[in-house]
Image (cartoon, rainbow, N blue to C red):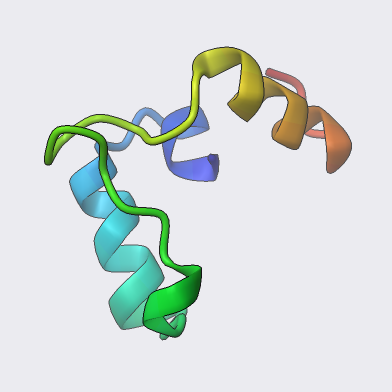
Length: 55
């Protein structure tokens, strides 16, 4: 979600989840179609707003 807000690709978001955050495989959000974000823009906006991050 923050990767999209920062205009990063889902590939970068995946690397952040795995290499930096070291999330377990069950918690990783996988890219849609290999490159797309798995949530709709509306869903991602909701999550960003939940953390008071303007979307």
